[in-house]
Length: 420
Ligand SMILES: Cc1cc2nc3c(=O)[nH]c(=O)nc-3n(C[C@H](O)[C@H](O)[C@H](O)COP(=O)(O)OP(=O)(O)OC[C@H]3O[C@@H](n4cnc5c(N)ncnc54)[C@H](O)[C@@H]3O)c2cc1C
Image 1 (cartoon, rainbow, N blue to C red):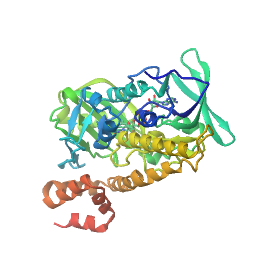
Image 2 (image 1 turned 90 degrees about the vertical axis):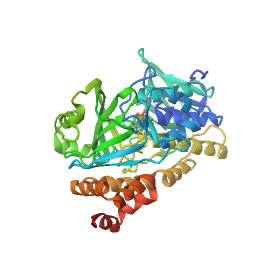
Image 3 (image 1 turned 180 degrees about the horizontal axis):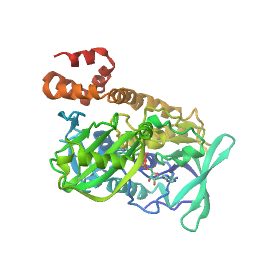
Image 4 (image 1 turned 60 degrees about the vertical axis):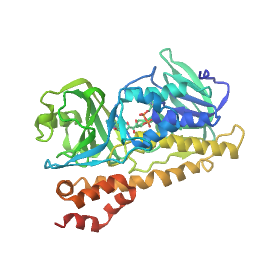
């Protein structure tokens, strides 16, 4: 069992937020013998989290490494094998995703209600992790310029508490309180998607592919239909927050409109029913490079703005950034034993890991996102891929390899597509 939180000791790390990023970081630290305090504002787990619920091969890899994959597989889940892209003109093409390591399929869909509970239970059962729920820091403790801990009010009776650590890790999502308390600039709205989603029953024609519909008024965002367990579907829409101002319409209304009127979508929803309520949340994209470490602090996951700017996938990068932060903290503690806050230079390895493993993908995905603003390009690309085996192969290669994705920066790529 996890131990009780205490105000007496100096933890190796305080992790604020027990979503995928926070649990990953806490578990990797604890598995390496570090003492962690994991706090979340939620009063209890499981709790709802608005998401498309796609759990990619990258996420599966980290879940396996943390030993939680068997528990995740016990939760109701759908299987994902590929991707179907639907152009604004209704043309569509399907391509397989590469299988996840050691799996005969590419990924899962699991409700985040369940996914996050699995990670949270693993963290709260770890003897090196103390867990505190119902706690949201409203103050960062400081020694000079360095962050040395957090303070805030606990639970309904608002008992004031303060905790100290060598590093405070902000894993508190898109509206990160840690980021705000650090006075970091707000994310520009052209680097944030506004996302909404609901669960539907009775959607016709579901397959084991995730479906992305590029529809007018939403580009470069899209509407998605993701197949879930038991014939349900996660149906949602993501649009750049900067474009929302132009459209002057709530994303819920855009989604409802498409379900009612779009000729590629409406026939699928003849007998569909919304199961529960729609939910919405921000999706902070990795096309904006946020400062994510300093003296005594780090940001990971959505708090660090690490969502793929094209696909909107964020769980994999959240889990990975949690791991990279934990590895960096571990190395920094070995180099500087004691109780002093870990310095910005000691935490610089985290930036290097993001540079090596996360940001290059962001650059390629951002390029794709920019291109997918153009209706004619989508119609041409998806249309050619649907009709022409060589163009379809280009798409399969792009989905399968980061190297191939890079080719979209070359004019030759578009020339090849244009050729009859
Ligand atoms: C509509 C939508 C669809 C999406 N679809 C997908 C998808 O299909 N696949 C995918 O991979 N990604 C998807 N994403 C992105 C994904 O949801 C995020 O990237 C992911 O949840 C980030 O994980 P995280 O741990 O960084 O933050 P979160 O999951 O947001 O977790 C943050 C945690 O911090 C806690 N917290 C927040 N504020 C405080 C505070 N002040 N004090 C203490 N605790 C706090 C919260 O309670 C929460 O437990 C989608 C996002 C949205 C909005």
